[in-house]
Structure formats: structure tokens, C-alpha cells
Length: 264
Image (cartoon, rainbow, N blue to C red; front, top):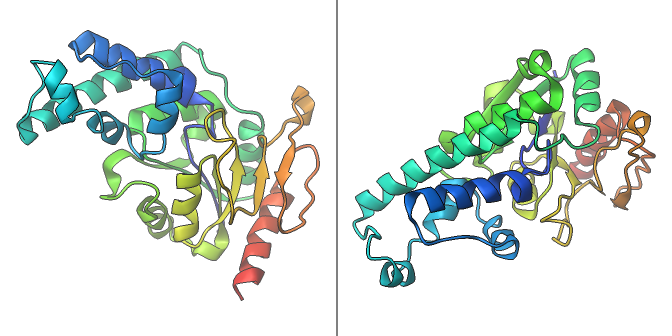
């Protein structure tokens, strides 16, 4: 049974700028940590896979010099980062539950189409699992979300751009790389998927539009939803697949076949 695997942030919804960033900053403020990321600064942080890892990048000698309360013991730092991340996750899921961030075009439509055709559905993300499940339910509805496998957070030791999360997903789903297609939005996500041998469609997000997507089967503005008046734009089509208006399951299968033929 083939599989369609989505990244979460930037793919199911454009969550980085409007969800994660304000949640990180509020968690810092509440804990008295003198860190507030601007949109531009956070654009650099998204190149780091994992929320705790992004937070950890701030715990430097420079932070300790201007914040007397900064823990210097590694175990104490780990404890504070874990506490901050738990609070950030709660704040983020509240924003998602409130409906503050809309799903990206085409996610619910293509998920339902793939499910009806017997494809396995999954999300593979470096975000915390509660955050991923909140976005997934908002994107496709509770019933269909319940049929997704979710691989998230610290489930593997090395986060994207390492391919571990995708290899774990393939092993758990029992599907060969040649029988799966990934939808990603970032360069590090593309590297992770391609490192696991997976054909990858990229739908650029607000933080990733200018990244290098060499190796992607398709680069798109989004998956498109013609009925909702939101046709997609094709940004790169190296295999000359020529999708039009919106991605459907025929296009997904064409991506999978083209990648398999290319490998042979």
C-alpha cells in the first residue's frame, strides 16, 4: 500500500511565523528569559530542526553575560529548556485550537483523495506531537486525522535534515521508499526526505520561498484548491510533469513513478 507523508509546519499550515514564533516569544517572556525573536531572526532559527534545539541555540556565553539567572550547568539548562518548550507547546496548541491559522490550500482535498484510494497517510515532523496533532485536526478534520500515522518530536535521535524521521516512518508503515511520496516546505526537510530515498514535492512557505530545492520532483506555491478559488503556481517542474491548477492523486503517482524510473 503506497504512502503519502506530509511535513507539518509550513505544509499543513503556515505555522512558523504566525504560530510558533509568537508562542516561543511569549514562553520566553513568561519565564523571564531575555530573548525575543524578530521575524527576521526566527527566519534563521527555522534552519535548525526542532523547537528545543532552537531554544538551546540561545543559551550561550553572551546570554549568560546579560542574564544573571541563566543556568550554566548543562542539566539545569536541559530542565529549563524542557519546561520552556512544554509551555510554548501549550501556547501554540491554544492558537491552533482557536482557529487562528488556516490550513494551506489542498491539504484536506488531497488527503481525502489518497485515503479513499487506499493510500497510507502520515505526518513526519520535528515539532512536538501535541502541536502536530492539533494542526492535523485543524487541517483535515478529526475523523480523517484519526487515520494518519504521526511521527513527531523526539521519536528519533537526529532531527531534520537527518533522514531518521523518514526512515522511521517507512519502517513503521512497512512501505518501501519507492512507494511513498513526501510533501515538504523547506530545504532541511527536502534533505531529510531525499536522504531517505523519497520522492518529494515542495510547497514553499513564507519563510522558505528563497531556499534551494534542487532534488525536489516539483516545487509549488501550495497544493492548490480550484473549487476554493486557490489554484497553485508551479515554481519548478524538473521532470516535466506539468500539473495544472491543483495537485491530485494522479500527479502524486506520477511523481512516485518518475522518481522510481530515475533511480533505475
